[in-house]
Image (cartoon, rainbow, N blue to C red; front, side):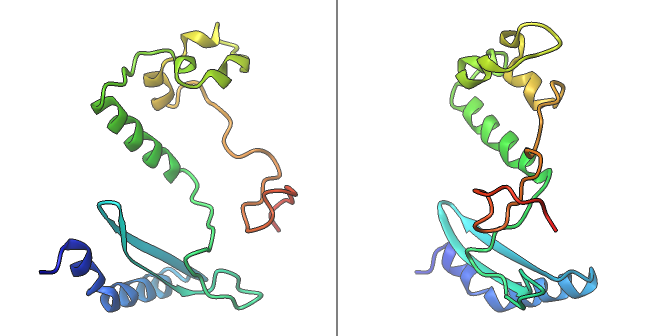
Length: 145
């Protein structure tokens, strides 16, 4: 009997056609996508180019900048932890002790709660300056070209 992951994998050709249509419609150089069922990667694929100049296609190891969508992933993970007993009004430093070294112009950093971080109120810095997220470049911090 086939499970949900197997059923998703059977839709691979349809997913690939959808990615191709999306890339063409939005005039993108390329894209990659995956479908996770439970804890299993049921399908992944890509279309176009991860590196236009090198004409390299995207694959399972391709890294992309995903911008503000990380907030969605982080928020979802934190809400799952809340469901397991995490308190949103706990000071963030109780769970992220490295924040004790942060300087807040709004008062003691210990007053920043997980709930407040989720609201994006404290305005923590995103990507470090001059960060290049392409493979091999996280070490040498070259700017994007």
